[in-house]
Image (spheres, rainbow, N blue to C red):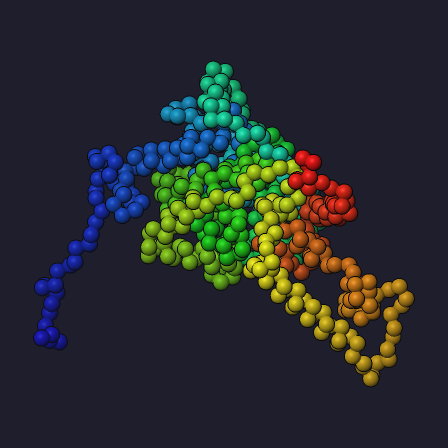
Length: 508
């Protein structure tokens, strides 16, 4: 029996805490410095060999980057992209065991205007990253996000991809690179240069664009799209054929579940795969997709990889502020209790394949205006997508009838004032005048809203993003110009459809 006055301090022994192996599981000699997973304890040198080998192995296995090719590294200043930069830097060094053979460059997008940073804060962040980039000796490009407002319309027009080369072409390219001493192709250290901040008016225009988005979920998706457009445009103008992203395994696991929640199921293979050829001549590559956030954090800490903490649009927000934030919180918390969560989701993404990887010149207009993935809206009548469209149409027509009835209801305290001839009263008050038009509706209903016309050129997920915008007039001009071009082309095709030959008529 337990007694109040009894003392148990001498009888109770401390429970033994289970400890990991004190020796490295690889060399069996050096003491372990870290534990990646249960039972996987590595010493410092063995962990570095494991980390470096994984990076080179994923590039060598896929054989997408040919020797001598120019590759643009998209570095955001975070741990994953800075770790990727260190791998490329060490892989190109003279003492590397298996040297990398491509020509690198660095691109950083300054998003200070999107989160409301002052000029001094933006300059301080750029100065920190500039010091990191100069230490590598690679050419670098510091791009304010405001530059996306001046991009040409060709950014959202998929260029033809180069013809697929046989497997023997890679070995031949390696042999030619070795014979011609490819070290002469590598860039020389670049002189420091000062980034010129954009004009205040451009920053205000960008803030108007992001401010017109009602939800944080849509704002993050739009910001990611604009960021990718600017990176692809920079790669094209500077002569790079590959764009290397620093998405880790943990980030891609969150992105997979987020994309499903946002209706991007048809685009999962391109959004999370190792390579993404949606832009045709510029191929996106994700060599960090085999690394978890834990492995990257350990490597950066042990080998002092510099990184810069930069706030984003979802910094200091609650878990339920956006779908992206909620999914990230869900995955990270589940990973803490079940360490195989991220790897299970990641293995699922490896099995995904795009239904339409190749396309011809006649199919270019069948791609989304924003993300440039294949349109997933051409489905059969009895589908969930068509049901959603019907529900939106019925909801819109109900609101329109309600607005018209409110406008036509007589007001005894105010005399009726008919609208001037040739002018719709909706142009002044923003409501349906009730006068019949050519299609039986309001005289202004013949002109479809800009949002409705734009949705026909978008995939399901991007259409949801545009739907959360108060107006599409704040979109960059290159997007609106390409939308008008596609609409005119579609209208022209309908006008001459009677004179076009079908595929089955070509042989007659």
